[in-house]
Amino acid sequence: MSAPTALITGTSSGIGLAIAVGAARAGWRAVATMRDVSRSDALRRAADAVGVADLVEVRRLDVVDPASVSACVAAVIAEHGRLDAVVNNAGAGHVGTLEQETVDDVRAVMEVNFFGVLHVSRAALPHLRASRGRLVTVTSVGGVVGQPFNEGYCAAKFAVEGFMEALAPVAATVGVTVTVVEPGAVASEFVANVGVDRDAAVAQAGVYAPALRAYLDRTAGAFAAAAQSPADAAAAVVATLTDPEPAPRVQTSTTARQFVGAKLADLDGRAVATITAGWLV
Image (cartoon, rainbow, N blue to C red; front, top):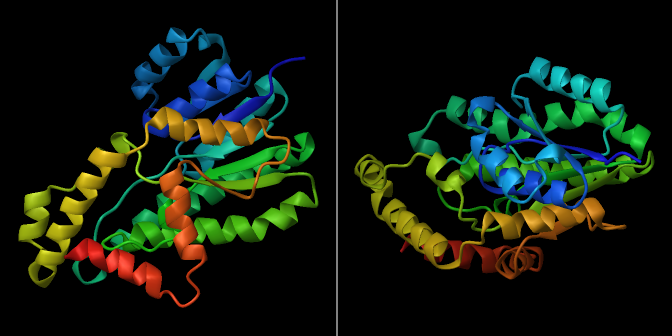
């Protein structure tokens, strides 16, 4: 039998790159998609280094462009005849607070992190129904716990979590398994891609400057001290592709499990409010 086929978004670096390589090592044909295929060199080198280059196939897909999504999915079906799994990994970080950014800024975050997931999932679902496949979405602990100066990002990730939690029982009636995977801090280009100049951001933050300074310093320290490697985070995602009965919600580390667990056990919100308030002093 031919290898099962998984389409993975956002694979030019970080977790997505590691997921594509890890899936190929687990015997999947990894259709590794990215907005700019000229950035695929690192992925190709990583796949070649572990002997799975023949199972990693790079294709262009821009999650915010429905035509791009439809064209990519159609090409995969035309070439391979089936689609057994989708991993929604593409996303973009964002730091900001409501009074100092526009609604359009927040809308742009939602387009990538929420509506991008919907575009890909909607195009893939008919084919996942046919294969009784899996829909896996990489969210974040920020999809469970609201975090200071991450309002737009957390809103998008909360939306993804709610959408997938609601979709899961419906999809199960037609044979599709839905899982969300929640990383915590991961040492990847994702953080760099947020594009925050710490000193400039603090200088422009006005009354929020002390809190933003404390938040940025705390976050930099957390990533330096406890960030998980992309490969370790990706391993949890790949496991959902092979687990006979994957859980609807998966965290990628002990730290992520503890953080998410604090929220899910916090009925009145005070415990989480105490935790996150402590990041701003």
